[in-house]
Amino acid sequence: MRCLGIDYGAKRIGLAHGDEVGVATPLPAVLEPAGEARWARLGEVIKARRITDLVVGYPYNMDGSAGFKAKEVDAFVTGLRTRFSLPVHLVDETLTSYAAESSIRKKDRRGVRDSGLIDSRAATIILQDFLDQKPPPQLTENP
Image (cartoon, rainbow, N blue to C red; front, side, top):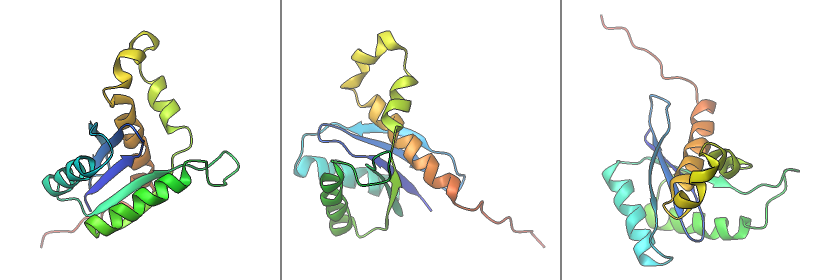
């Protein structure tokens, strides 16, 4: 399994990569504006990393109901399924952006916001949550 973690945003899309080792690592965020350039960039990453599964952060409220951005994410997920024909897994993204932003020193936050670093760190947290739910790979003995 080769997963791409995605923290969807209207301005930036944070990305992270993980595989059977079970460790999520951040990738550069998609900074292209909405439209075909954005989809093309995602396609490049999916192809280059030979992605088999997409893991998308889903905006739930603290009470478990769908958040106000849920319809926007739903449309994005429909686009992912249509364009890439890969399984899409939804993971609760509650407080991931907060956790990602908290991992950066306060004085440095303003400068990195537009770079997508916070978004990709959030995608890393989302993907790691997903990978942690998967059972570890079975070791095979060599005869």
